[in-house]
Length: 87
Image (cartoon, rainbow, N blue to C red; front, side, top):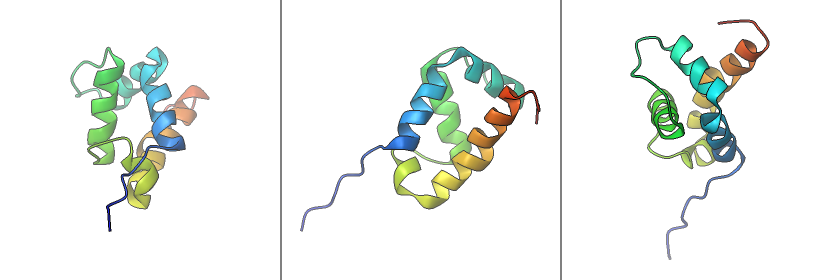
């Protein structure tokens, strides 16, 4: 029996869209002021993977605990920040 390769889905794509957005990178720098500079999508991706404790964005769609960490640590605070409720 062959192992099924994990594929990225909706959350992996959302994460990629977030990381490509300059406003999201600004959010990351404000939320984690001690982080290294986050100027590029690749740097944002690396930071999100560290915060969510994952090696690949695909885990967001294949590991419920990783998805929870993404929602709790990244997605919800980012939406609140966008709405002016800096957290």
